[in-house]
Image (tube, rainbow, N blue to C red; front, top):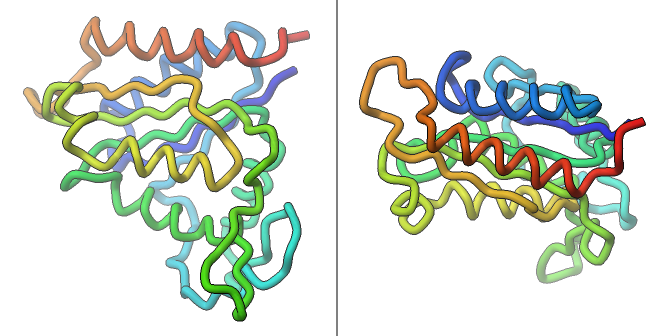
Length: 205
């Protein structure tokens, strides 16, 4: 059975991103895929200390962080997942601070000895896992994809952990009401992303 890890960087438990992920997750489960969820809002991740201790040992496996929090468990989940879904609303032109904090802790996926001028990605050159990248914004979707940094940031996080996007969706026009709901167009985008992900996974057994 294929296993997909969904990482939600939204603040609102019933917001647009949560609704989109619920739809995507339901589609995957109904297709026989095992789904694990991580809600970064409330998840025990501390801020990166930028000490680079996790980056000193070579190898393909992620380094060991000096911080004792939930990140080691999250790294283990990413390592065993067959595919990853990364999601965040757009705040101030980029992913949320929750997702950015998570991104900074992905330093464990880099190898950067003190003598080297820059880091190397541990997963670079390996067959990548499929990923779905999902963001939402107040602007129309095409403007959000062109103007904001959310999609490039999600894409870089995917690259760092050894994943490659097979589907992307920017849900635009999501600030017209205090409690926005998914539009028909947004639901179609999510449905297409779910189907593209399913096409890349092995048939469920």
